[in-house]
Length: 429
Image (cartoon, rainbow, N blue to C red; front, side, top):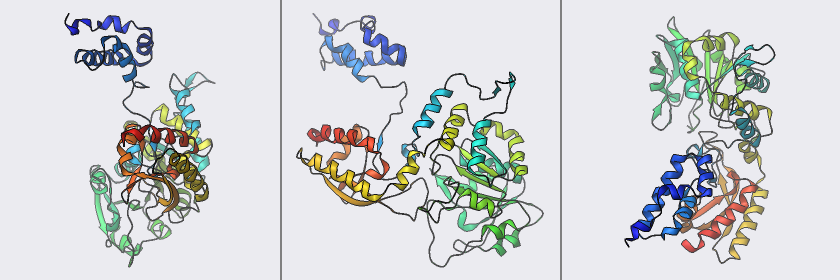
C-alpha cells in the first residue's frame, strides 16, 4: 500500500479530543493548518502516520497570536524590539477585566453616556498634579502631531537645530511635524542654542516653541541649551517633548527630564511616552495648561489618535498599582544581581557548562538616559549558546565574544526558566 494512503484524513485527526479542545481555544483554522503540516511530514516520511495528531498538537502555539513571550536578558530595560516596558501584574489583570464589555464610555450610575477613560485621566492627573489637564493618545509621536496640527498648522514651530532628531526606524521629527502643515523655523546651532535665538525668531506666524529632549544621543563639550523658564517667558506656547515618560524626578536618573519639573518651570504642554520609564502600555501622554489640552482634545484629529479600552485600563493600573517591572528593575541593588548571577553560574557549572558570573553595565533603552550606565551582573556563556537560547525565547547579548544573560532586565521569577533553557541548549552547542 502507498504510504501516503496510511496518513489519516483531516476530519479524523481533527476529531482527536486534544485537537478539538485546541480548536475551541485557538480557532479551527489555526489547528487545521497545524494538522495539514503534520500530515505532510507523515507523507514525507519524517514521522509515522500514527503520530500526526501528536505532532500537530506539539506544533500549536500557546495563544492565537504570532507574538510570543520572551525573556529579555539583554540588559536593556526598555527594549523597543521586545515591546519596551513589561506590564505589571496589576496592568495585565486590568487588561483581562476590560477585554469584554466595559464601561469605557458609559455611566453606570445614570445609564447614560459618560466621559471616556475618566478614571485613567484622573489617575494621570493625580500622578502629575502640576498638570492642570491631561489627555492620552496612541503614542508620543501622535501627541506631537496633534499639538502641531492644532497650534501650528500653516504657522511656524520654532525649534533648535540641535533637536531636529530622528526618533527611530527612519522617522525624523522634522518630517513628522512638516506633515501637519506647520513650517519649522530652526534656530541656534547643533551644539549651542540660547533663549535669545528663540526670541529673535518669534513673530506673528509663530504657533509655538518646541523643545525636544535628545533622548537617544548626547552632545558634550562646548554646548548650551535654553532653560525652560526663559523659553516659557517668550510670550508664545512652549511645548516640551520629554520623551521617556518620567512624571517626577528620579535620583537614579538625575539628568532625565520629568513632566512635573518641566511644567512647574512654565511649559504650556508636555508630551511623553507611556511605555518607557512610566512602565505602562504604549501611549502618548499630553499634560499641561487646561486651555491648550482642551484645544487638542476638541480637534477632529484627536478622534483618530485616541486610545482603546485596553490601553486605558492598563495605563490606569500602572499609575495606581504597584511599581511596574521597569521601575523596579531600574532600582535593584547591583549586589542582589551579583548574588543571583553567582547562584545561576555555579548551578550551570555543576552541569559542565562554561558559565561565569561577571559584573557588567545595563542601560535604560528606548532613548532614555543614554549617558547612564546601570551597574549590573550577568551570566557569561560561550557565544554558541546564543542561537539555541534564542530558539527557546531567551534573548541575551554578545559582548567580547561571549553571550551575556544580563539579570538587570529580568526578574527573579526568570531565574528558573533561564536555568532550564541553558540546560536544554547544552546538547545543541
